[in-house]
Structure formats: structure tokens, C-alpha cells
Length: 601
Image: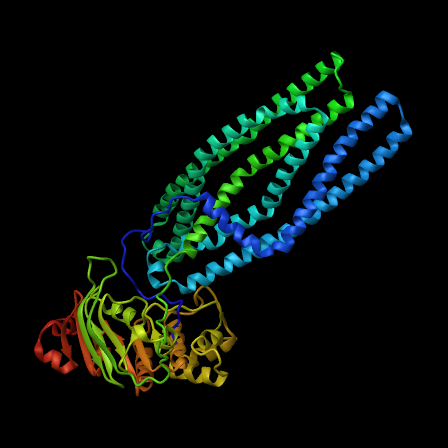
């Protein structure tokens, strides 16, 4: 069984950050439609919200008109008893409107949280289906930023903005009708300012949208830098590079600051601008209404008061939407980054009627295999290998020769460009991917352990394993002795990738995990490189027993560990330059002989 979260080495890219893909052109409409599809799955709750918003908005609109009537009753007629009744009605209307507003807010929060949970789940599920190439070519911190920061942006915007936008639209409509019924003349004066507001808002929107998008991209880059430096703290301290990393962080952080300031400055203009235009409109309405009263036209103080309130109600939603613009643009930029992940090309699906590799004898054949991570830069050239059941094939050669790439192809972490790889006569492209990887056991040079107990980490190789099976696998890997000396034994909790254990101990647990999976084909990528000589001898003995009856591929740098291999394939610059057993290759006095002598001379 393969630990899919352990990343095998892919193409080496110089520099601090892996190659970042260019960002797609922003599509506000497309992203908005896509978000609305998620909300559309909660139609009943959305209908309830609509009803609650309509009722609360209608009550507020009616209450404003009643307020004008109350003023006329008090000033014009001096009718105190009627005024008290009107005030009681107003209290009831405002209380009910507040209750309905609270209910629609609670319902919207429920929808928003469920939607975000669904998006986050889709993104995490998608990450499990993406090919290894995606993680080799994208900074881990940037990927994490999309799953956390960008999704959180969507969450906060859905919580605060969606129902508010809908409420604002209804408020504008209801208020416009009420204003027309009161005074068409004053209504015309109040809406004169609207085209100016819309035009200026649109202009500012176009200017600021690109800065919000750039801010999200640079935030992902910053997270990637932080994640990489924290992960490599030992290297940073060994080489006294703290100051260098601090300076590097300052540069990226300052770059993010620049984009953030530009985005917020542009979006921040909208609020004050809207307030200024609203104040102008307010003054024009008050002046026109007072002039109509002076001229004896049909107009009362209560009507003017109500109209001024309506004027505020009419422009306030536009101001709210303008003030929400910053959050909405940030959320849409984040949503687009999330959707970019969801749109990534997944691992190739199994072919129809793919073969289920249940029982594996272990015949593995590479025929004329060519492969390159990037077009025009071949890594493997015309690779031919033949492994019989029970044989051990050792892959040796200088760093970067292509040894690990061969394993990447056998596990289908990458797919070959030319040639074929078969297991028991079946092309691995025609085998169900899950059954292929279930037949393989891998122990990597770079071990990875998850947060949890030692028992849970070993059981990762076989989820239904009993404790006795776990203990037996641990004994074979020579891990049992040090585990039982720990205060909590197999219940010892590992944190931060097993940071509370030595590198050798982590390697032995990784080996125990592979032993427990009982694979038909075993892959060892310099599995004993991080242990001392005495422990290495014990593990080699355990591995020798484990490898019996299995086809084994061993990547080795210490050539003393593969003397007993049935076949040693010597790889250099993507080609198999020599092959044979240890003695045959020494007698040739070729490339292998030079490698061997360089270690033991």
C-alpha cells in the first residue's frame, strides 16, 4: 500500500519557490455564477430568507411613512391620543422588523457555513486526486493558502454580504415606490444623483479589481515563503541565514503591502464619495420640499420628513453595497483561486474495464521507456528492464541520473511518453490505479509520519491490522525495542512529522509501515540511509527476510548494500549504461567499478 501523502522526488527546480503557474484572466461574472450554484443547493432556506427580507423591508418602509403621518398629527392637529396609537404601531413594526432581520441573518449564516464546508471538502478531495506534478510545481504554502485564506474570504463574504445585498435591492425598490407615491417631483430630484454614483463606482471598480486579484496571489506567495522557511529552520540556522530570510520576507511582505494599499485605497474612495453625493441629494430634497411649502404647493412637514427618511433609505443600500465592495472583490479573487484548483487536470482516470491486480506474481518489464518532466528535456531514454518474480533489481548511479524517476513511473505518479511498463503482462495504464498501488510497498529516503500515535502511524500501511500484526511488523523493522522503551510505548503521540524521534527511529517506523502492508512488489529508496551502522545491519537482515518471494526495486547510493542484488542497473544521464550482478560489473571495470571504488578506495 502506498502512502500517497509521501511525495517522491520530482523535477528539481532551483530557487526558493517552485515554478508558479501564470494566473488566469479574472472572470468576475463566471466566478459569481459558480458561487451562486453552490447557494442554489439551499433553495428552501433561500426562499425563507427572501420572505423574511421582504417582510422586514416592507415593515421598515411602512414605518417611515407612518412616522410622517405622526408628525402631521402632532404639529397640524395636536391629536395626542392618535399620536400615541401611531407610536405604539411604530414600536411593534420596528421590533418585528428587527426579529425578522435577525432570523434571516441566522439562516444566511447557516447557508454560508454549509456552502463553505462543501467548497473546502471539494478542494481537499480534489487535492487527493491531483497528480504529483501539481505539488512539484506549486508552492505548498500557496496551495494551503487557497484551502484556508481564500476559502475563509468566501465564508466571511457569504455571511455578511449576500443577504445584505438582497435586502439592499429590495429596500431600493420599496423605497422608490413609496417616494413616487409621496412626491414624483422630489423623487425625480433624488434619483438625479444615482447615474453619477453608478458611473463613478464602475470606474473605480475597474481600477481596483486587478489590485485585489494581485493581493490574493501575493498573499499565497507569502504563505509559501513562510511555510518553506519554517520547514527548513534547521538548514537556516546551520548556515546562519536568519537575516537573509528576514530580508527575503520583508521584500515579499512589502510587495503584498503595496498591492493591499492600492486595492484598499481604490475601494475606500467609494464610501466617502457616496456619502458626499448623498448629502448633496439630501440638501436638494430638503430645499425643494421647503420651497414647495412656501409656494403653497401640496406638501406638508410630515411628508418632507418622511421623504428625507426615504431618501436616506434609498441611498443607504447603495452605500452599503459600495462599502461591501472591498470584501466582495477580495472574496471573488479568492474564489477564483479556489476554482483554479478545482479545475486542475486530475490524474488520468482508469480506462474502461481496467484490470484489477488482485494476485501479483511480480514480473515487471520496462520496454523502450522514454520520459521527460518538461518537453524537450528528456530524463529517461530508451529504458529496458526485466524483473522476474522474487528478483531484486538495484538502481545505482549519480544524483539526478533518473533512478527515482523510474520508481515514479512504476507507481504511475507520472505517465510515460513512449514505451510500456507491464506487471505480469498487464500494461500499468490498463490496471486499476488503486489496485496497482495496493500491490506496491514503498519506503522513501525522506520519511513522513503523521500527527498521532506510533500505533496509528504503523497501521497506516494496513488500516484493519491488529495490534499483534503491528507489533510483529515493528519487530521485523527493529523498531519494537525502542518503542517499548518510550513512556507511552505504541501510544506515544508523534508531532510535527515525528520530530520527537530521531531520524533513524522515524525511518524504522516507516519500514514497519511498509512491512505491515505486505506488498507484492517492494520499493526501497535508500531506506537505511539515515540509521547508524549497527541498526543498518539489523534492518538489512529484516529486509532480507521481507524481500524473499517478492520483486524488489532498490535505489542505492551505498553500493555495499546491494552486493546480493540479482541485477544492478547502472544509470547515467537517463540511460542504462551497464547491467549485471555485483561481481560481473566489477570485472568490467566500467562506470560501476569507478562508483564502487570511489566509495571504498
